Image (tube, rainbow, N blue to C red):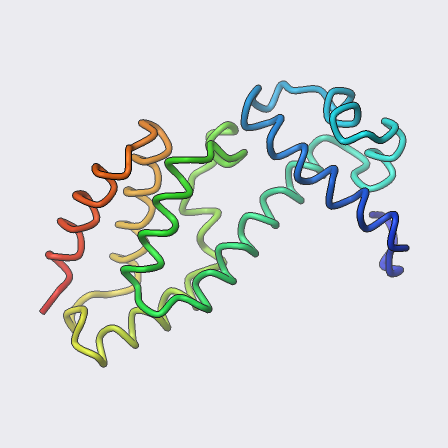
Length: 173
């Protein structure tokens, strides 16, 4: 949106529908997917898409922000670092997000989550679930590597579980 005015209820619904549809279309067809197809699938006019997102890049940036916000919310409510890792890797394996399709470094998308993940790390260290010498940059590197692997190869649940078991065995005291 070009202004900071609150959206009318119908405009907010359209925006949410456009974002959800765009995420699906880009996941299926890659970044070359057309905004016209997104509009048609969302049941809105192309002008409505461009009213909310003036360019395709603006639409992609909004999707990235949505992904980051969802991950941040998940990190804030996760009980353990392992639970958060498990959820992120499962999502990465199941949903080929715009992040992957654009070959954007997953760690870049996760940079905004470092604080929330650092809090999980500290809590796990206090409860002796993770060694005290493990640092946040190491955790971010492991999360990035596991997420990229799951994204690239669409890891099945058993491979996700086995891989995360190896990672967390190495992190435990």
